[in-house]
Image 1 (spheres, each protein chain N blue to C red):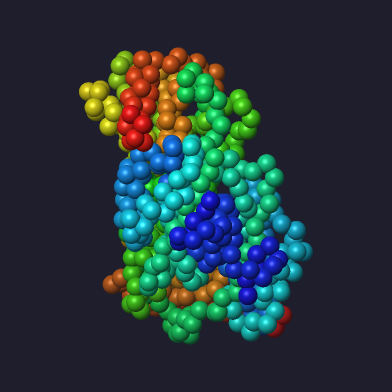
Image 2: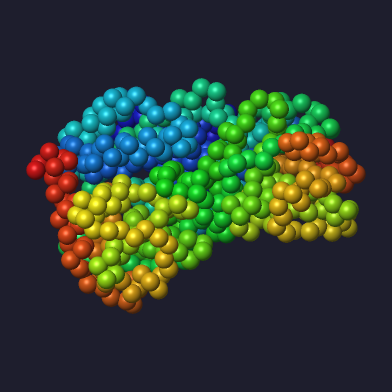
Length: 276
Length: 276
């Protein structure tokens, strides 16, 4: 089921600025028993993205209603919200009256093998680099060519995720995930200041670390540092946490921090989806 | 008139990667008496963009036919070609079989006053900076949030264009134009290596300079250097060349180089559109 501005529809007008310029935002949310997980956190990030891009945020009750309508019969799925600046004329100038477009689509939950989360995955370093632009960093906007190009660098089952560096050589994130590593009992992740996406699951990991009284070191680091980690993992809203078993030829073991965070996040998910 | 994959249609599927990720390219072309001006150069750039993004280039004769069909009755207009990677599933992975979407739309020619080209325009420096990413620099792709944000910084008739610096403080281009300046009889422009669009009109200015035996200096420069120029101008495929009369509080006069290039490009346009 796809709702476009509240109506069942699978098409948008070609004048929509989401198509013309990638002028919009999106959220990708796990659905369990008809309920979008961490929905309030996703809505909060969407609102922040709207604020930064100056896209009027839609009526919150209308949006929640539409998402719930799309999700209601899904035992386990992914719901994607796209919010664009709506239709416009040619040229970058925004229309005087912005009428954002809401697109809410349900997708099957991806059939990742259970052992990706239990045992871990393999990753490569992507050649495609993330650009440096603080004005867009953190926002889950529709300008995603860097990720598209990075994801095209491998295919097949040998690797499950690609690690992206910025143009200065700092490790930032995975193509579809954020990335954490643990060294000497300290958890590290890249700051999302110059590039990268401030993932909802990244935010939940940060909060979980704080709740558990575990300090986080948020600073720039290079690939050599990552390869010396005691443990490391990817995270996003759909996969949760995937331990990293191997980055190219360097192997890792799933460690106690990763397991602790997985347990914590699974518990939070149960509470959030009303299944605790 | 709008053609989507050869059919008169004003809608695309919401699964199109042009919408989902800005995964595509565009060209904006002046139309004179039904003929797209510098059409071969635009097609060449579109093909280069496809090559860099690994989007299959459509059948060239089909594309030309569709563009000509859309333009044929237009005395003076703008035709926009959007080419996306086509429909796809959720996630950055490309579909195994890529079926690009062709969208060809006719727009009225913008009603810029004639004195913009004759006498010149006023510009501001935008606060929004261009990111640094060599992998995407030069390509006229659909990831245009930087330009959208920059163009939103002013409204009304006081300024006609905004000048964009990159995050390192180098002057790169206008929001919808490339930028040249002349100092001591030497023409300067920014290289399009780390950011910016390699405009078709920029290419035609470069070729015209070469034809006229005028050397070009292509190197990074800052705003202070621009403000000391003897003359400067914006260019793109729709406006041609606009002399710059004022950047914020600093005034300029339209100079001999700008006039010479305008005359040269007008002559090339006449030849290209078969009206010489």
